[in-house]
Length: 139
Image 1: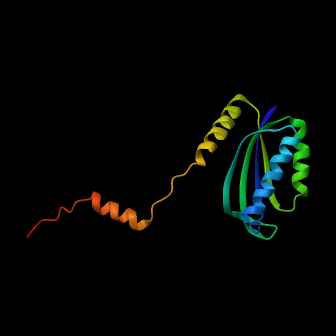
Image 2 (image 1 turned 60 degrees about the vertical axis):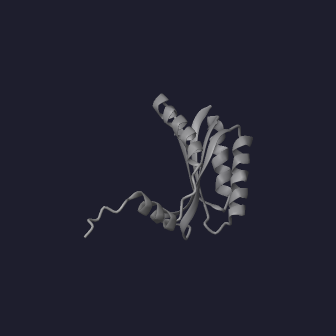
Image 3 (image 1 turned 135 degrees about the vertical axis):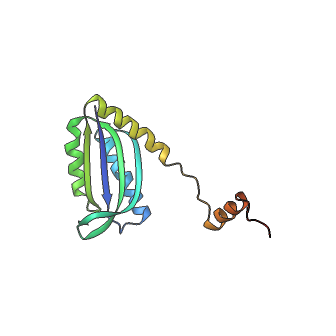
């Protein structure tokens, strides 16, 4: 089985629930065609480099998976039928160096999902003033 990366760009007009359903459908399509999904990364809504099907933004998802090379044609055919996907890209990793890079990407993307909540700007400003003592000369 070969190593692949599949980038999908969904319409920005879809709600989070609809996007979740479409992603679940894509997972199902991949698994039915013999793919073993290593990880899936949600990249969120981003501005497109150029207008695609009258859309300037899109919701990006990346799948890292292993599949037989014969199943890729069927996967891409089913993606083309889906009107909610405005763009897709399939990348095959072949040599040892590329496969190592694929493993690194699929492993680090699992870690990227864990994000710590950011503090509000007011709280950050309070912490900065507490940490920096005033060293102004006294008159």
